[in-house]
Length: 302
Picture (cartoon, rainbow, N blue to C red):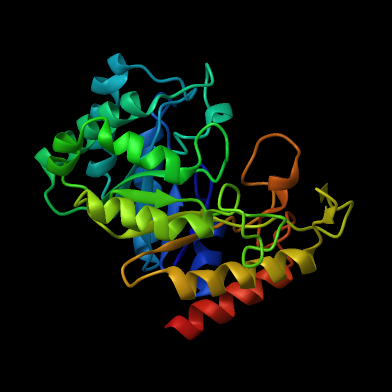
């Protein structure tokens, strides 16, 4: 298990992850940022000094992609590899159109970029874990179980040859609804996992599924109300426990899970529910009830 830290991980986050009893951090230093791989290298050294592993997500600053960006992304991936990261995730939520400009990243373009980046990585390193982009739970226009087979079938031969460790990764957010009793598979991605497993197996693709982001917002100060549900810290703790119960039931050995995030305010740059995803309040000094839920699960798993 680990923490999805947002773009970068501070020393406070690394220390908090270690204290929580987790073993990974997920970061996303982006191609095009000044000094991005220098900063990543520092994070890797500090994480390793604490006994933590680092999953780096390969993204392009601005989140606007074209086929002609492949050489830049390949070079960036190799530079990330050279920092000593422990695993690489190619892309992030490429099925989530509002996350991009100009609001589209077709599966065939995502396939070509993913294959090309993976090939560049494998030419340098035959063993580092490589996973495809963690899919957003967004139901439109592409739910994960709709996007993944289209992404794979765009070029199945070269996907199979690319050397992925995991051909599928998901972000099974379901907040604020209950992830157990919300049975509409178009919205609750936990009910898509079995379908995705079947799709992966049918195509002979590498089968572990990485859960690279999962979380639920919660605050007791002007808590957001979403679809009539008030997102308090108690509700966050309740849903976090249910997420972990689902993971215990559905996840398989060798399938890591990353909690988003450690501190409030780290997930987004604009105010909104996701600024309250943290297990620790924004002041950094007080843990929310969800922190204890994750601590109990992580240390039970050990």
